[in-house]
Length: 115
Figure 1 (cartoon, rainbow, N blue to C red):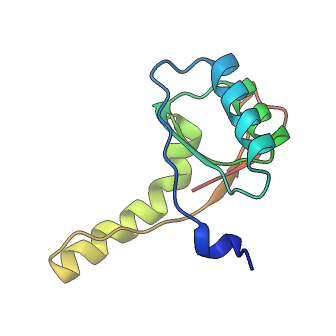
Figure 2: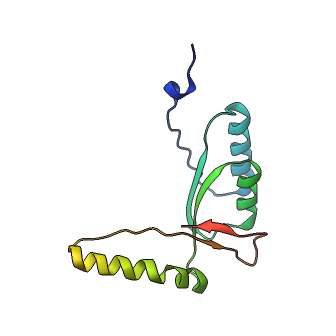
Figure 3: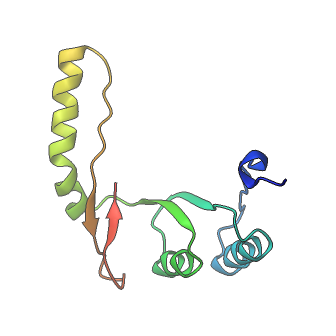
């Protein structure tokens, strides 16, 4: 009996030139060819275009996209950063803390969770 969980292996795809058309086509192809595959897109560029968010959401693809620094996100991160610095001084080692907020850039249609 075929069990998808036993055959699951991570597949990493790297796009050399981030072009929304080619990336979207590749993602759509994977969704059609492997409808039960969990796809996670990670982009470290820092300024994803709104069209990329919309495409990934329409295709129901999970994503982690790095956002560029801005005053609103900086304000939301002050408390966790301060806490991490205090804990780091107490423990004499680096500490990583994560928090979340909801944020909506003016160019977005709605808010998204930001970690």
